[in-house]
Amino acid sequence: MQPLCAYIEGIGLLGPGLPDWASAQAVLSGREPYQSRKTVLPSPASLPAAERRRSGAIVKLSLATGLEAIAAARLDAASLPSVFSASGSDGENCHIICEMLASDDRQISPTRFHNSVHNVAAGYWSIATGAMTTSSVLSALDASFGAGLLEALAQVVVDDTRTVLLACDTAYPEPLFSARPIPDAFGVALVLAPQRSVQSLAQISVNLTDAGADRLDDAALENLRLAIPAARSLPLLRGIALRQEKPVVLDYLDSTRLAVAIALC
Image (cartoon, rainbow, N blue to C red; front, side, top):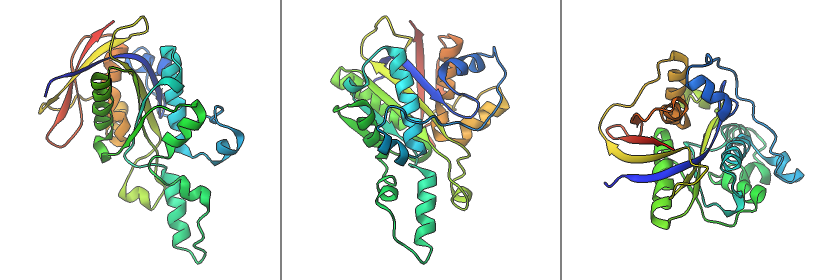
């Protein structure tokens, strides 16, 4: 395939020991040691009070990372098409519904039900931002970050428009955790643009490869990369944090990875 190219104008990040992109840059560049701490999800202040009370982890994570990236790019969230990618949806909500279905009382509340759908984050995003633009929602299990990145880049190239990618995953409690061991919440958001601007951080050019995926030198960060699908983005983020124009290879499918060339702006 021909490389898909776009400019990154803003980054949002939230995960274990990585509370935002500014803090993560210091860790990924080696200026600060990585210390894993449980992800703290902020209250989604941009939502009306009723929706704020009903929102689950995947909504809080998507809003936190997406709005951080868009603020860094100095754009209006309402104007941006969006791509949401997650290997699942809200793990805690799924767990509670399974518990209810296994009990004597199988009456599932409407709030539980509408928070169980895979596109729940996209719905809350439109409420929080007022966005009436197109929104794509996809899932590809462990390949979800790569699939989301390809979808967002395709939109940027074909439609010649900015797009925000929001790749997020949340944890499952036991017993689901034993079958799908995602240990914590991790999300990354990228504002992608077809042309260079004053806000551009780097240009990326993505192609398919059969080369092995890049690994992280820090054992704890490498464990994080392997444990959560959205964290497959970490080698790309490390390259940007280090300001290195060095190609990186990201995990995607079993026999196909994503080769990403980075040109700093």
